[in-house]
Amino acid sequence: VFRSQALIADAVHSLSDLATDLAVIFGVKYWSAPPDSSHPYGHGKIETLVSAFIGIALALVALGLVSDAVTTLRSENESGGPGLPAFFIALFSVFSKEWLFRWTRREARKLNSKAVEANAWHHRSDAISSIPAAIAISLAYFFPDLHFIDPVGAILVSIFIFHAAWKIVKPTLLELSDAGNPEREAKLKWIALSVEGVRSVHQVRCRQVGTSSQADLHILVDPEMTVRDGHALSHRVRRAILDSIPQVTDVVIHVEPFNGGPLP
Image (cartoon, rainbow, N blue to C red; front, side, top):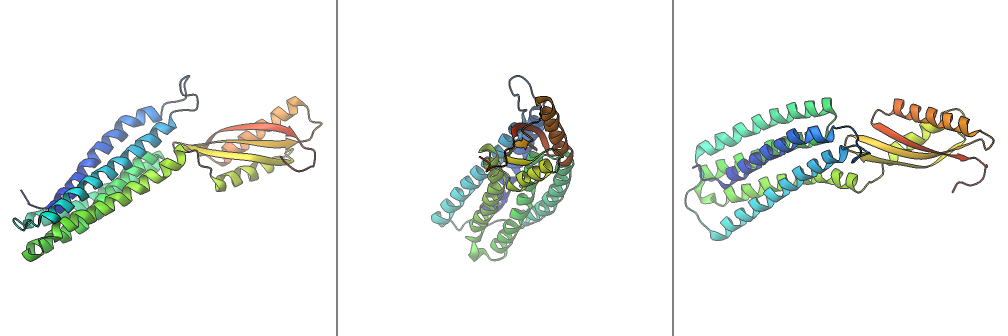
């Protein structure tokens, strides 16, 4: 009706919001479920998979829009430029999506949910991508000779969508590949060493599972310490870590005798 490919690109981007919103709404009850026999480490990575789905869906949408825009440019079809109502719709889209981004991000931080925050940034990418769409539509309307501006605007919108998709997918790839967190691992080591009775700490590892982290580390203690005392010390280290870093929900601690030599 409005004869604007840039507006169509923006509309398809907005339509993808609906799909991702539904993915978050229906996914939250699964990834927030407690550990069970089939998922002893919890269901947190379901949230990671939902976030990855959102990012991949965005990238596929952008790819299709670029393909359509390039086809239009090659066809050199000069008939039927966009109408002025298309410009006002794109302008309204900018402000409404920015408001939606701010509201969703605020709720995501309250819930500490990466999937909801990914969806918030999806809304922000919508708002930003509507700006070149509005500019392209207005130029194509007021300067009909610049008919190619509208599909170019659609390509610009797609670039914003690709960028938003990568920002969402990149952290999910790191998490699904069990990438470490050096900063958090250093803090884990410092906390463990601060507990009386711990002589040294090594083999500290930490991985992200949804919104929480799981860690394991080795503590070295007095070789004359009894098994009972070593077990009690490991519990004190575990409690110190859980109390100091709320994002860490599980810690496995291995106790070793300290001999004063080089660590393995």
